[in-house]
Length: 441
Image (cartoon, rainbow, N blue to C red):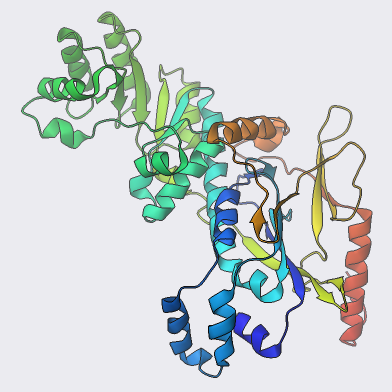
């Protein structure tokens, strides 16, 4: 499409908004994430000479003027503006997560990358928040790198998971790249590679000392803990990865306490999700932390969000003209928008979606803020710990019924009067221009 805009000489500014049409089943909200990655992508947008030559070789582009490749693509950079809700903010269907305003071709070029970055990390952060809430204050470690859909997905899933509520990740590259806490334990292969469990445990602790977390379910959990106690080892924790985790955790806790290892933590892993974690917590199992992998990094119960990136206004004769789609089931709202959150103690909790130029309801909090101007980031750097704390408070301000993991209540999202009126006017104009008149609802 960028080539088509170039050929047509179309260079007006345009605004696109990225939003989710519907929440996944059993989700009362989503947690916005991926903004840092999106800003980094836009700031570094460019095409290498190899990429340009590849595009030039495509049959579909053989009729495009050389100037598109040699002038436009060789020099293109993102020069636009972007508004976004902060990472960690709970958001709902139809609410824009970001708005991009830029020359039309630029704004179009970045569509796929922005959808991929924002939607994936939002999906993982939302799952992490649910799991962390289910853990009720117990530690949650992101363990899903080996089950993620590739190394890059594992990397950004780790960041999103920590933003959403995990305390650490087993992904060392994420620790290096993002400065986030890392944590890990031995694998069954470590135990199996040694002549016996005690030798495996001793050698591991020789390397890692009191930080060691020993995996005790390779052969027999209680026997393994007995070996640890008899040998006088004092690991930071032991991990269970299989079997009846509630029952085994009680057995292991009792055995540890009998040997005076009252400070040694009991950690569990193995096909956990928020529902299984909640069951274990409700059972009273003496578990100090959870390692969660597959269900978190792949978001197994809702692996894709119904996110879209749609044109909402375009410059004509020096002014921005609102646009909308009319397709059944996929209608969009016209104009650049703002979201106001009303959730203080004196008024009902709800969000109002209105036009960006509106004042908004009195006392309501505007969620979208400008994060890029003329292609330059305005975003201050924030630590993952700060973002996680912000997320915890923001989600905690939602009604409890909206945060339920099963059959959550629908959080009310309404349109402002101005947006309602604009939507009616734009639809009327579109139907009039098509000679069909305004349809009955």
